[in-house]
Length: 291
Length: 314
Image (cartoon, rainbow over all chains, first blue to last red; front, side):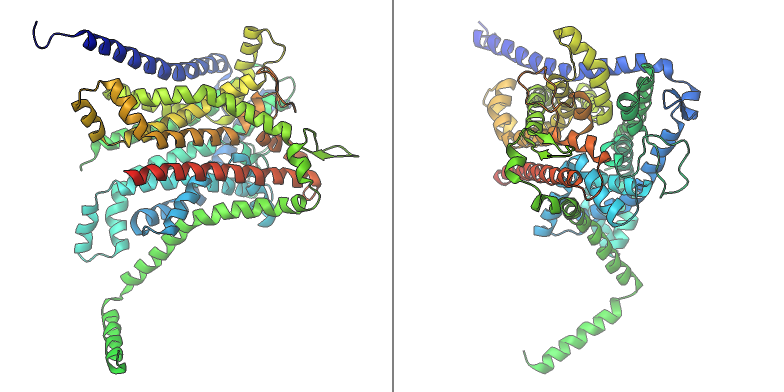
């Protein structure tokens, strides 16, 4: 018998190995397949509603007919204002954590705060937005209050993504720049940020996607169930896609069965397209990276 | 130090400063202050959340609220004219049952998936699975709630021949599907954090792949996996829209998975719109908010400490 022949133990090991591997594969598949099936049902039942008119007409007949134009534009407003508020703060925080922060209790506290900001339930963010922006700062129920609430809530997404892409820039790049006599900020502005801008963008896209889908934080801070007109400024209330889905599927009587499927399909397409863009962008960058 | 030496040193520093402190130096200072403010803002916001939620709820919590009744009574009747009662026991039971079922669904599958992705899958397969899991995590909670109402609800009614499909089962499964991708991602990170040298050492001893995973990688990643589960629990506990829409929203201590329940978060979402600022009802909903904040804070803190524990050992 050759030295490399398979012993009984060998064969048993192989069988166990195969079994274990298949078991875990099945678990992974069972996690993914139901969601894919659900998406299939959403598409099948929502697609008949979709048309150009669905996207460009306002809801009519007590939201049982017409389109989703006001909700779509409202979501664009909310997301835009939230981004204007959170991206500068988020990027600054990430620059501090990646480039300046010493390893001390304050930095640990900041990191803990970031984890908690991401972990606080969305309805608590809603209470905060109501108590702080609507009542205390006197913005009333408005796009501004809703967007600021979402900005605080999604801040960790920008911070984490930006910090990661800043840290991915090799330290030698910074040292080379310092040796030329550049200040810290000059190094960050001319070397670190240009090399990580695309990573920051993927984080921003993720934030857009998250902001567009959130419902609870905007329910009491600025999104209205129904408005017949578009917002004129940041102190107006507005409709929003996510709240619109909640309203037409739970609050409004006699909605045609397919209508909420159409709303859900549009909302989820927006979110998934943005996330897919962000992922594709990231993969492209990783392949392109020179170091 | 003699005074003249001190003065000398001082004038030297001033001279140095005059040489180097140009416009760039001041810009640099200004930026470092600016980014510091950005960094500290995360702490400011988390404290702000606590302060503003407490500010609206504390008056009620310290005044009208009967703390014992709050935690031990099943009666949640905040709108009763004559005798409003604020007992959250049934709401806690609702949250606990839904979150518990969700974890039963999500923990084994997401840990299994994480192990497959991190330890068994290779190359293109691994990348595709990771992307898929990430996309699943992006589905908004209101869409999940809608799925619970419009797809799961009739499915449960048909399959189990029950009158109502909006129940612990529905919300639990929905929440499980929601939490699983996040737990998978965190667990996979924890497995990846185990140094390859551990695996190589075990393989060099003749261990097979699954022996390496079970005897070496899983024990080494234990804390990270525990943190993943904890964060999943936190997520389930705090989820609002999906639970509001899929659980049936009936105040009830469930005795079977087919009972409708109501969650703490969902109660705030459903009732806050109808309350006047300053009323007891408004106050009690903010008190619930304080409670939710404290519980999730503790869960996140614990997860953080558990992870840090593993960092020290390596």
